[in-house]
Image (cartoon, rainbow, N blue to C red; front, side, top):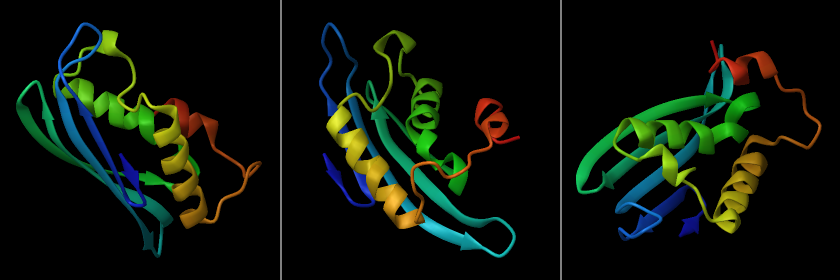
Length: 121
């Protein structure tokens, strides 16, 4: 379920999924050196194992949030065969659009693809 600033992911175990109860919170922050960025807090459980992790994404990489969230979920027990953590396209689109609007970005804004491909290094 999506609401601005928060995506709740819940799934019961079955043939094509694991037991998930994950909250992904986000907010726009500003830093004098980094400029605008998105701060994420991800917490919940995968197959009953609790976790909590926070991460930041620069403005020009924030669109890639689902990839980072999936990587974190896999680190905490999500099996890669189940695919991306944000499976419902409607929820992904709503979160993407909310982040885009809050950051004031527009289609066609420049993106440093080297940073995206190498994890912001």
